Amino acid sequence: MRTIPIITAPEAGALISDGAVVTVSSSSGLGCPDAVLRGIGERFAATGSPKGITTVHPIAAGDMFGIAGIDHLVKPGLLRRAIAGSYPSGASSQAPPRVWQAIEAGDIEAYNLPSGVLFQMHRAGAVDQPGVFSKVGLDTFVDPRQQGGRMNKQTPAEIVSVRELDGDEWLFYEAIRPDVAIIRATTADEWGNLSYEDEGSVLGALDQAYAAHNNGGIVIAQVKRVAAGGTLSAQTVRVPGILVDAIVVDPDQLQTTGTPYDPAISGQIRRPLATLQDVDWSIEKVIARRAAMELKAGEIVNLGFGISALIPRILVEERMDSAVTWVIEQGAVGGVPLTGMAFGCAVNSQALMPSIDQFTLLQGGGFDHAMLSFLEIDRAGNVNVHCLPGRRHVTAGIGGFADIVAKAPTIVFSGMFTAGGADVGVEHEQVTIRTDGRHTKLVEQVREISFSGKRALETGQRVIYVTDRCVMELHPEGVTVTEVFPGIDLRSDVLERADFELRVAEDLREGDRRLFRPEAMGLELIDAGLPEANVQA
Image (cartoon, rainbow, N blue to C red; front, side, top):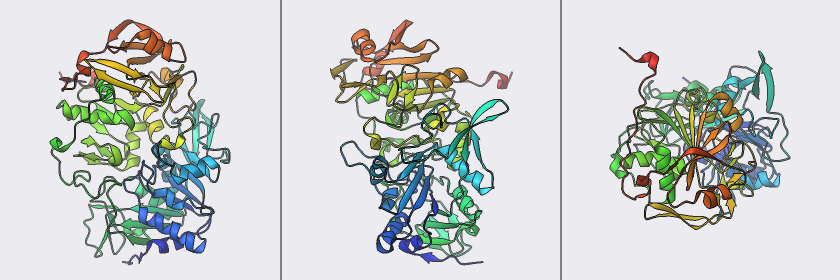
């Protein structure tokens, strides 16, 4: 057996040629090979090489709070182009991550493509297919008839095209054939076999390694430790050593940006749920509670970032944590998805799947609900979730959102009705608008389309929008108010605060009063039951 060389992070940079295509396995602060990325930046600063590289990130490399990752590579002359499902984001009160500064200044070319499709583009490249045909992204900003996923004027329109196949319209995404794959694991043995026992997810490491290896490229693995050759159980090896060319050891690598190590994230123990902190009392908690009421017991449910990320904690507080099975794009099945710097992880998972396999479930519509968030909604029911006007850097990009909404049977979007200084509270079992936001989030036309209302109506999806003052649904006649919360005036607080005419349901309801009390509301979820064809007599 060959012994794989153990090298330093700057030496890893020396393995990358000028102009190389480098794919990086990461999900924000989860599984990020940060030491290697830092080493590449250090080598460039010292030698001027590698220069003019293209990096590919199916999910962001670098924390959602703008820490490290791809920012190590944002140096004049080093990074020429970035292709990513998402990018590190920063708080509105801090300087944008360097990658966003470079994108907005036009210093680099940049694409934002659906995460699930990006994984498939690697798999296509690994088996010498020309690319991926998909309906994911049709009629959104990824569609070349709109922005084609391009993030600035310097980026050419050359990755996504529209093709017709058997009279049907598809998007065609070109295959990715990287020169270098940078992946991460917990342990490597001397022969390069990789195990993931302390990781929160395998992500797409195997397919990214295949794509590089099968096209004559190299694979660099960052790990926490090295074991003797042949001592890893074959059942625990997730990337075989035949694919690995070099190992970088970082004994201090974190499980996530904010987590040194939690065995409940990597599935080694089950954490008592009493250790999870309750959601603070706020209008955001009310929104999350109301969104949770749309669920049914026994369902498979996907979860997104933002207010919707609070919903699993709501179910924990209501002692309904096992009522649904959560599936998140990073790979966790079951358990309780986490928030903040550990977003993308779950504690007490039933399984940790590779991301590309999780996207097979999601793109195929093999789940019941998608619980997501919004930045803007327009007259057609379109949603913008990735492009905040004037402050793109505080959003992460499209991520797996486009993959998820493509065939989700029911989608619940959660968010505030207005933005810009809004102060909305909950007092005396009703909503109190102390100061309304300067800008409505219900606009005539969203800045860029992340979700197409038109396609949702054509495909029969049910779409619900839960806000701090009302609940709306997308109907063929338009966006329709179906429920108003106590304390809210329908005309002045809802209808007159939208830039387009909202319809009002004939059976308009008042919000459930239990939503507006700090104590547990006694949530009960109707049993989803079995599909009729599967019911046994």
